[in-house]
Image (tube, rainbow, N blue to C red):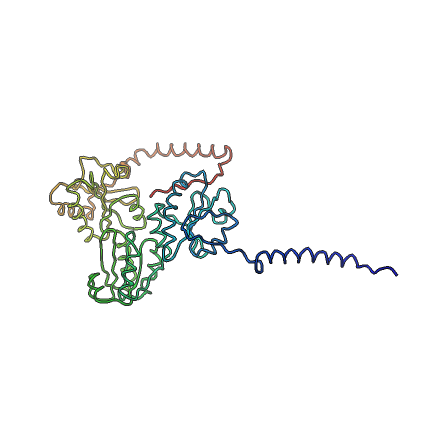
Amino acid sequence: MGKPTLPPVVVVVVLLLLVVVLPATTCGADAGGGGEAEEFQIPRDGRVLELDDSNFDAAVRAAGLLFVDFYAPWCGHCKRLAPQLDEAAPVLAGLSTPIVVAKVNADKYKKLGSKYGVDGFPTLMLFDHGTPTEYTGSRKADLLVENLKKLVAPDVSVLESDSAIKSFVQDAGMVFPLFLGFGVDESLIAEYGAKYKNRAWFSVAKGFSEDMMVFYDFDKVPALVSVNPKYREQSIFYGPFDDGAFLEDFIRNSLLPLIVPMNRETVKMLNDDGRKVVLTILQDDESDENSPRLIKVLRSAASANRDLVFGYVGVNQWEEFTETFDVKSSELPTMIVWDKKEEYEIVEGSERLEEGDYGSQISRFLEGYRAGRTTKKKVGGRSPTLLGVNAVYILVFLVAVLVVLMYFSGQGEEDQRPRQRAHED
């Protein structure tokens, strides 16, 4: 009898098992424990990490809070952002709740960028324990730090002692308003802590002494104290707390100072406020000797007219903004009411503030505005009546533009390179 031979089918099965099992066993041994992904080590020196598609997921898992700049090497905005991130990174890494800063060349690692919806550069995202949120705030290092500190903080902090209150106020810094609820139930302001999380700090103090009552100048509880450290303003709300409309009005009004110095930052803040703006335009809001006295009177008027936002701006400080209101230098200082969009109103008989009794002149301006003695104008210096006179010409122009756009829309393919994301602080 010849030697027994294995059936071909058995041979094939054995070979397949060897191919599948042996490499798997070898890889598991090399991985050091059942094929688990290698742990990402976060450096302690606070530098900006350079990530790619091979280590990105591991970095997200390793860092509880990861702030990522999806950039492109050719992007000018990205180049200007880089030194700001280098400056902010060690500060963020040193927080009590550290935030790690990283960057990804999303022009090279396109799949990684596409995974998180990157369609322009730079795109900034905060990964909070793996959950991404796009960041659209300031890119200046100091404001970036303050904004991120606010984003990762609890919606409402619970403070148990005087020392906790002092620490909370100190850590909050000077950028955002603070709301301190003394004897206020957390559930009453939790909704607003979440809604206005990006714009203010919220807390409730469960334990506090009479020293705190004296320091924050309230004499009964419950009391919600609003503090705006940047503008050195404070106000107190005693209720009713069960009426959400009154409570939210107080919170929303306290997000802005009584009188707003107009600049690019504060104009953005006005977008979420439904009130019109009583805008005072000066020649110079810094060097003019009469400006501080006028601003003081405006602050008093603002306190008595909380249904309006009061602001001021100097031509010398922001000419590009003031020239859109068609105001001549001979008419300064002047007051207008701006809807924050396309129209503003001038009050008949109150076109210019004369030096002297500013209080009476501002009162007459407000009386005239509320009585409807105003003339509406378009931002940019155009009177609304011009729209009717030139309606035919405007219509012809729009039709011509539409025809041109339709023509060029069929010419070639659109450039597919992602756009640069401009950002103006």
